[in-house]
Length: 307
Image (cartoon, rainbow, N blue to C red; front, side, top):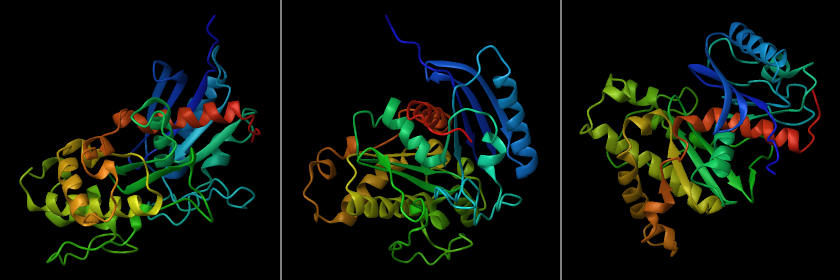
């Protein structure tokens, strides 16, 4: 007899919208509500109202998972644990996401970055199933990396921010980039806003034959070069709105990666198996909200403390 899966709630906070889902797994979503991302006060109030309605229903969640854009303070015991920190997003710097959405609900709760959560979802239900070491890269409003090593998200003094690494630029490319902190880091060169700033067009309106796409692929290949040398993931998934608009970038990225590594690593994945090494995500745009669901499921299973 099959064991009933626990109903949990997931909240994905994104740059333009937030997705709240109630269910047990991708094949069993009981409810889904989308909330536009505006200022923190009104956005979090709307999400809290959704959670309130679910907790008062006949199918209340047994845990809550929160997958949020960042940077976030995820240091347990920190006075600002669960808050958004150092963000340029208006109205969100210092927003206490965890306390506003989870405090006093009496169920286990977990919070992580949106890209880490998406990686966990891909490891459970997507194209990284069966792997303990892999990376999930999202290229959209920003560039983020969910890095899984030995089955766990990587965390030290803070969570990783690999979208902001500095890279070797394509020869002759002197555009300064548009990251307000680092200029021509990967995010400053390859994110949706960077593409729009450089071209004057939204990524989905930029022609496929624009030379800018070649520069984007080169920048992303440099990021993947760093990932391969830093933690040697067994697979790298690359998604997000920019890749969804131009999935053919993956082929160019693979070529640039092989060129950049230049034969240094003699591993099968970078030779004959590269088409299965750098791939599109299996869950597509659903990876984010399903990642929040995965966080909630793990919080319940681990007996995480209620907040």
